[in-house]
Amino acid sequence: MQVMRRYNRKWTKQDNNINRFRSELNHSCQGESEAIITQENTPLGTLIEYDGENKKHFKVTSQLFKTFSKEQPFKNFTWKTCAVVGNGGILVNSSCGEEINSAEFVIRCNLPPLGDNYKKDVGNKTDVVTANPSILLEKFEGLTELRRPFVERMRDYGDSLLVLPAFSYTANTPVSLRAVYTLQEFGSPTRAVFFNPRYLRSLAKFWTARGLAGWRLSTGAMVASLALGLCSDVRLYGFWPHPLHPHGCQPLTNHYYDDKPGTRAHNMGAEFEHLLRLHEKGVVKVHLGKCSADPR
Image (cartoon, helix red, strand yellow):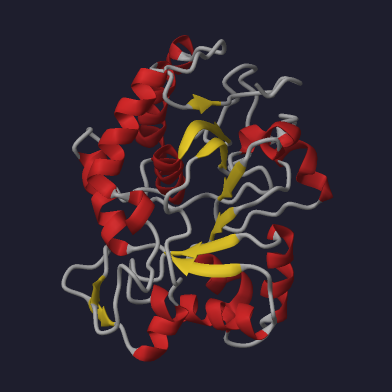
């Protein structure tokens, strides 16, 4: 497989390349101060411009303003080691759970299951977890009726941050707000925050300038980019986009927990190509296959 000829299992971190890439990324996107909507960067009365719909705005009312984080959760802090966990079927029988849990900061995508059946391969530590509103609609009826199943699922993630793209599309806003109010009403330790559409637009421009154009960034690419701006050592797990295992060529399920097809809104192959280039440069370590006993 041509991709695997470029993949170096004996990865070496290249600090100069990391610092250069982080500097370019943070200069373009300002993730430290802009990644999450806050009361500081989005004052009362602001017209929020949706990043996925042209000429669509939402005015910040006093009620909406109260749902915003008071300050940026990632401001003035750099984590040493970050694990970003995608949901790819390559994680099955990977034994990466212990290695993932050893990271100082762990980000997961789209409310993945973390039960005992999966712990050995994906771990359970979670600091940030994302949720596309489509998942809230499909699995939890949009939180318009029974809401306890959603709250019970969130227990898997403890006191993590739940990041919602509430202002990517107009349809995202009401269900995202219901998620906020549900967590508050049930006294969940999970705190919901919103991706800042200004940050997501900047991120799209950043990757477009590097050749990743014509497709909307996947959640995995978004949070991998966020981690690259916040962490000095980033490891990616479960990001393999192809149907065959890179080492044994055995068939893989689409996700580590099911085989449902993903959305066609993203170009996962092109995204992986860019992540592989960063792996080759020692900027990020992409894990493929089994994890070693030593997570260093």
